[in-house]
Length: 272
Image (cartoon, rainbow, N blue to C red; front, side, top):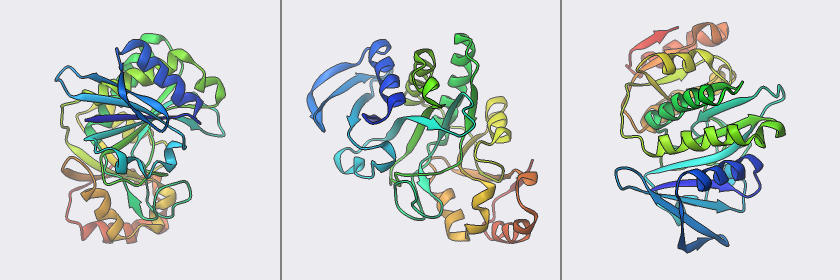
């Protein structure tokens, strides 16, 4: 079963969920969750997809796997940034360091790299079909929940104007369903370096066969040890084949320690 989650406190999530209900033939089941109906449909390969609404913000949905045991969790979410740049994004939740925004300290969710890549590709295609002026991007691994299940966020941002853009909400809804229907498995990498929104990794995934699972940004590298590196590798659905470094996007003072740490992991390293 695949579970799609929308917080009732999140305007963008509600708008994306409404686009799912309007365009993807979900039916209302006899079951309920947190006072709302559970909606369901089947994918083309006959797998169940459930859509639920929760009272809490999605970052605080640490409880969700106590109530459901999905093969894949897809959180619908708003995205906020001070720049306000219209953005469609995808990432795995979890905390590389402290738990400042939900989840648990130093615990990340399992990254469904291939499903995220499919969502990213779909966002780009559907954005162009809708003639929308939005960036499409990976985000680094950040915020809660920290789950022992494959989990991903599909997000609409970066300000209230975009959260209420129904065309963009439909793009995210359609991309979520592409991810839910994914049966592909791509060669997968751990990405390290660069900003919160890594254009290099995004471009690689859109133009090549590679998928990225967890992404560790420049600002977190100095706080990451070998145990967290291994957790990022182990907590990926696919076998992580290599580590890709955004080399210019890594502080000079972090490079020596980082390479020494990565040499102990014994995976191929590619610098871009």
